[in-house]
Amino acid sequence: MFTLIIGGAGSGKSEYAESHVLGLDGQRLYLATMEPFGAEAEMRIARHRRLRRGKGFLTLERFVDIGSVPVSEGANVLLEDLGNLLANEMYSPAGGGPEAALGGLLSLGEKCRHLTVVTNEIGLGGVSYEGDTLRYMEELGRLNCCLAARADLLVEVLCGIPRARRRRNHAVSI
Image (cartoon, rainbow, N blue to C red):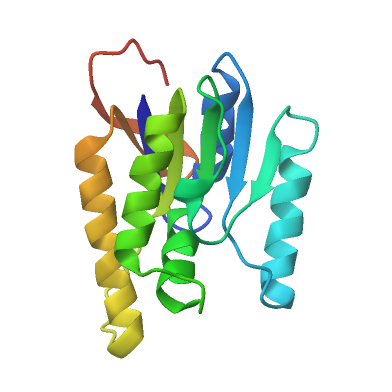
């Protein structure tokens, strides 16, 4: 099963994603994708570590090439988040580009029992961008659309309130 959770910054999407995965039976793997590239990133990483402490997640930090992550067949994987993964694949010297992000997710989804991906809605800001920023936003939008079309469960989180946008052939409660 594949769940995609989307929302703006500070929307509560990460908290919802964790509670969603905690409701699943089996091993829980938290796949963290934010590179600790500066003080602000390190603060955000520390905050997320504190929030999930004691919740039963095995945490693995992987910034690129997530398709090669060793995952047991019965695992429930929470990937936090697609925006960071895409930026790493696009701009890190070790990255393989946007297609590597999509290919890695598809590979990861084939290996585990349930994949939950957190992603950002960034297209509602009403600001015009150029260059690399515009390219990144277009790629994230493309990936979000592609993954939303594949999702068994698509959830939008707004102001901490989750709303199912798609459910496919599964009994799911929100």
